[in-house]
Amino acid sequence: MTTVLPTPAAWPRPLLGEALPADPTDLDAAVRGGAFAGLARAISDLGATLTTATLAESGLRGRGGAGFPAAEKWRAVAASPDATRYAVANGYEADPAGGTSHHLMLARPYAIVEGLAIAAIAVGADEAIIAVRAEYADAIAVLEQAVAAAREAGYLGDNVLDSGHALRMTVRGVQGAYMLGEETVLLKALEGRRGQPEQRPPYPSERGLWGRPTLVHNVVTLAAVPWIVVHGADAYRAIGDPDAPGTVLVAVSGAVATPGIAEVPTGTPLETIIALAGGVADGRPLKAILVGGPSGGLLPADLAATPYAFGALRAAGAHVGSGSIVVADDRTCIVDLARLLTRYCADEACGKTIPCRIGLRRAAEIGERIAAGLARPTDRGLLADLGADIVESALCDHERLATGPLTTAMRYFGPEIDAHILRGVCPAGVCAPIGVAAAGTANGG
Ligand SMILES: Cc1cc2nc3c(=O)[nH]c(=O)nc-3n(C[C@H](O)[C@H](O)[C@H](O)COP(=O)(O)O)c2cc1C
Ligand code: SF4
View 1: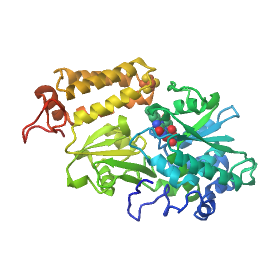
View 2: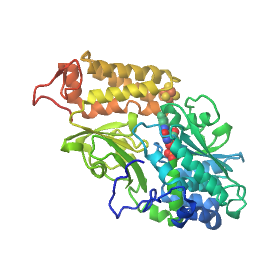
View 3: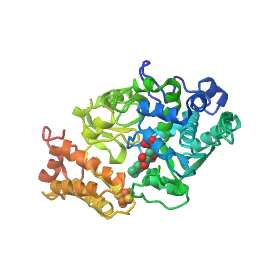
View 4: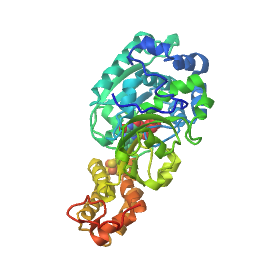
């Protein structure tokens, strides 16, 4: 299992809990620790409307990337005239530098099962699916055990906690590439169809699985729900950034002393999160922080105090994504890193939309020729224009975000890019075959 980074004792841990149980699938132990108290309260004390109102007051926003207010989705699904509705937990985890969903599915399966059950019942869905990346065979096994035990104990099934609500929950392994994490693609995969993103609206809350209204949430979002129902909206609102309260799971990797996962209040400065991972390894200087996965932003060291919050990250050119933070030290070449990320985003684009399919490829090629010492003097301007065009014509969020690495590289590391383009020099000495700058010459930042 992934390393869980120690956090200050005073920090609340609605997601991971105070202590992780020795056997996460042990239902009795989980119930002794409070599992399913939220489901009982949602059903017996609150009912669907008050449960949703509690969620709205808590300010919970989706942790799958876009940060959409969770209760708004619940209300949209519940308001549908279609009585057949579904609830889906997204445990695909597309980000190769992620790991937060995987960890949570292994460590707190009942929090996900319970959160999904509360959500499904609140929106009037009697069928719920936990969709998990097929490579996460361990998580699939743990969740299947948890779902079976919960069903056996009456928390799921034909008559949930004797309430008259029926809820069938299944775990499904899904296999595909990066785009499969996108909700419309995921839903098609669950239908057994090849998927490309669909134009939204209609959103899945109106027309989702099998054309029916479907609630889709990241597993981390769902795991926060039981805590909110038990402790109340005010307690949740009191944690972290007022604009998007609560905690997030972050996966810190790259050039840090101890890569791992941590639960942190939203709004925690990036530098504090990096310090949880032991800081930059070997005491080397911090050069850049990739926040938001392959389509994230490359933030320079002087923005390390940026709060890990939706608004602040967006303003800086990054995004929360699914919680990955990759640290680069002074040996990294920003051109090299940005071109690798852009190539990844271009290769993973599904090809449905021409500006994305062709535009990202061209952007990757420009990045590659800059790194190869074959840049044209106009390349920075060309990249800026191309980036703006790609974003403008976006069909899905991948295209909207995929130019993030290049855009932030140009915004924050201009001198390093110019050194490549105008002088044929890679200050970090990474890009071959072009030369290394003499000591003391230009660097980025
Ligand atoms: C390219 C791409 C990949 C995505 N991958 C994931 C993923 O792996 N897991 C996830 O929960 N959401 C992912 N999303 C976001 C989903 O489309 C959707 O917004 C999310 O599952 C909704 O959950 P939330 O309300 O809890 O944020 C991805 C989006 C895009 C555009
Ligand atoms: S924008 Fe890109 S990833 Fe999204 S549907 Fe179009 S080609 Fe596919």
